[in-house]
Length: 524
Image (cartoon, rainbow, N blue to C red; front, side):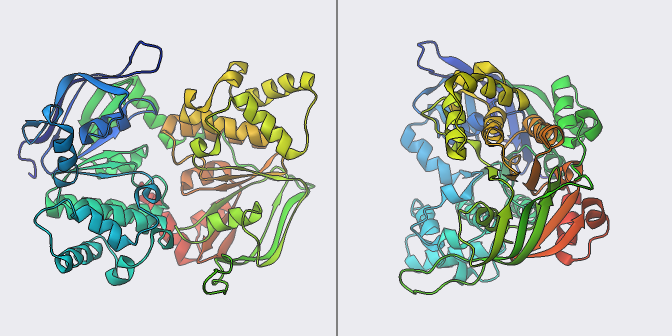
């Protein structure tokens, strides 16, 4: 057995957040759980259940509006809530490491990887020699899977893929050899191959370094395969706690059972089916010989090598096409080129009407200072199809109804909506412009399983009822099977396979496709 007592004990934790009304809102309610030494504990639940606020409370990163009302958090027997802010900051690094969901926001873009990691080591008084710091960093970069750590040491974050940036964050957390590592959605934005490698790396660190891990994730398959035990949260409290096998195989509560059902994406229950084009459907998007690269630099005055090259594809009315590929293969660059956000260096893009996009993070897609009504009016203005004032409300009500929202949401602001509701607003903004194709770039990965199922159902209904064509960019092959009649596989900036979804997934012709399918079978 690896377990030798508890490394972390959370007992009777109550936390409130001031919402400006004078009456604090209780977020965590008598929360209690423990993590054993050398254990990987999964923490799951819908958005708003309190998972992230729990991790921030343990790490000592709460904002000023949050107040711990009662309870205790024992780390190696010491109550963290009795520590001073200075002592908590010192513990964050020495004893507690944290890996955030978005590595690009956690790394300083103006510093190299080496400088970012040197800053981590600067809080350790026992590592003062510059050469010793460099040696430790290089060894850790090699430990987390970089074959050429010297090369990575000198790179800036923007020159790394998503998976590479996440490995750098893991290296930074592991440098301090913490007793507890908090991993908050560390793989949700990664492709299945990269996600599997990150999971394997974390598991090896747990085994070899004796680090305990609090693993927060919406991917219940990954939790099942990766975690020793699982804690299920709802509305700020624990409603289920058991081994991962028992939680996933015999859930004790209907809430846990619902989470599992939504994560498995039962197409019959949800009423989802792939979007096929009719025989006489018109082609709404044609791409021929498309290539793109980043522009000429001001210093070198030369164009970088192409990121995507020779892309040929077409999408017909009513068709739902999936686009998959490993991190760094060019999917996002292709999407940006199709939308005109990056100029093409060669080739053509033609569509019967305007294209619209739904992005991964609805928070960054919406203006926090304006209501949902304003967002829909802005979408109309940008589409060049403004309505008369008396026509606006009926149009807004219809489009909100199409995405499963009500008229009451028109007066609300983005921060007053859940993650799934914000994503539905983004879809409504697309629909009101009546585009020929909706391009959805990872619209599900940042959402919990229930919200994911709701958004997938919404997009599928729009595809079938409105006949709107879709290009779904995703790492989730289960989504691809459920929604997409055709599939495109990219690797190294090129399309390596294209055809019927079932044909490609059942009989892959390239190593890139086989690797994605194999990783998906492991539940990542």
